[in-house]
Figure 1 (cartoon, one colour):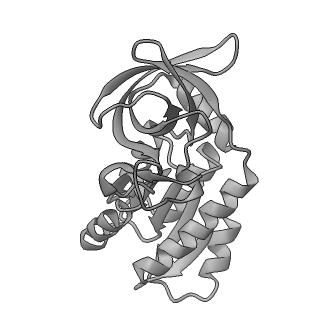
Figure 2: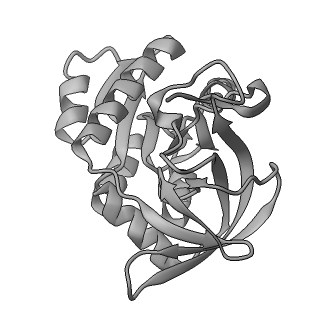
Length: 243
């Protein structure tokens, strides 16, 4: 059975957090607008120092990184990422014409290297193909969840900024929820979130959407949740899932 978004809204936003790093403000703002159409959370940094600070505050699954940055350069940022967040996927962008740059970047831990100027659609295709490959290597984990007035559901597609809950309860977009994630019989994690999208079955709406947004049997609704407050233990859980 297929399921579709309410009111025709676009829902296929990827849960990965993306950090963009480039000292060209025009290119940086253009990339941010472009990738915000496909990802829930996109952050831009104009210097290497700022990028490292952002990496220390948040978990980023994808970093698009320019090599030639003032101050702390891209190679130093890449080294920091590989030492502190080894599962983060880094895509190097550079105006260098050095034929050995791509090989050097990959040897240092980058997923790919693209020369400037580049086509954003081509960059997105490379990025999506890499993410899809990583996803196929991971086992998707689900967790029981409680929220609101003891309503229950199952959590899918966990990320550091959001989650997708399958439940029998309809919630309007904008609804604030106190969420209890049941990691196991002995461990629970309390979160504060906000509903940013709602999905219901194809019996009520059309056209169909992809398998990623199907609601599991016995559940009538899917809730896309933006995490507003989270403890450190939640970040640790996300890191272990993505490992």
